[in-house]
Image 1 (cartoon, rainbow, N blue to C red):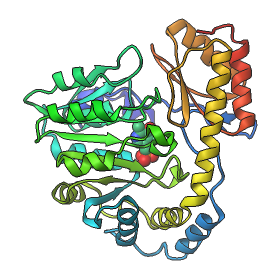
Image 2: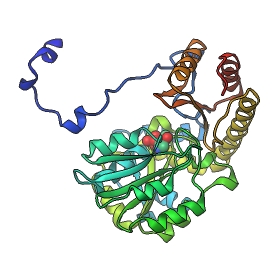
Image 3: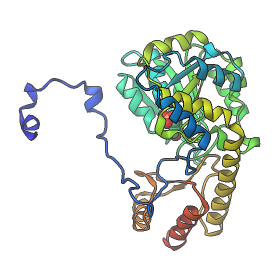
Image 4: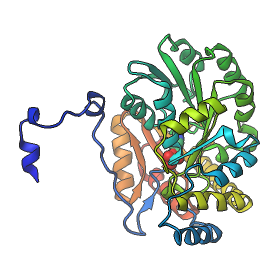
Length: 365
Ligand SMILES: *Cc1c(COP(=O)(O)O)cnc(C)c1O
């Protein structure tokens, strides 16, 4: 009822200022018909694998029971696949859920978290919600993390630095040698989170060996997800690789039973289907390269994306023009105020629709 909203604010329970300061949640247009191409959320366009659906159906017969709170089998399987021990693996409801656990574990009110910008939109939100202060450091002109400026931004209140590679929304990767120079400059008590949500989509020669950095530096944490290459966005499961002491802290900051039993079963079945999933990733990478090549031929300038999306930088009038053109064509893409448009790579037919819009938008760059 609207009466409650009309009551004088002083009579309502108080909401923390960290919460009221956040931008209001604006739901995007939903792809509620098959004619609409959903290219706004970097999801997998492949249907779930039959073996994964079977595992979910079988787990569904036991939903009267709580899930395994410690996710023992899933953590064992992740540990084996990454080459670490299970006590270095923390699972959570999406890697965003794990990131919230991390920020909650390390930040007191007024502490700072440094990240590149533009990057993943959840970063400033989660930091602000924890009562900490987001410190956004601009990307370079070539859309890369400016690791020197990020190291300079680390101060006495800095508790964590968030690095996203490949970066959402630009698709750019962090170079291994540059990362090593950066890690040498970061104080050992500052957490360095390497968010690898799009790791699988990087060309083999462009993949950062983040696990090696994790082994060398006690403050490095890796974040990974089953939402993108593994195609389980709807089930919410991701994980961190972190040193056992931090892993224990993360388990304390997570909600009990946060990863449900269907998600655990689907993630295990997906690890069993790595080869099939890898084929899908190869197909996706080929399509990304085709799309990027055609865009270059059309006169677009774009960074070399190593993720499952492409990034078109565009100032505000151009961005609005592009968004209107995509909307008219029933293609959902992601616009970022003042910065540009991110388009998820999908199947050939959907990518061709994207190309047609960009060929006729009259807005090459
Ligand atoms: C999609 C994405 C994630 C994964 O989110 P989930 O919560 O695991 O679905 C994490 N980081 C970045 C940068 C992403 O784009």
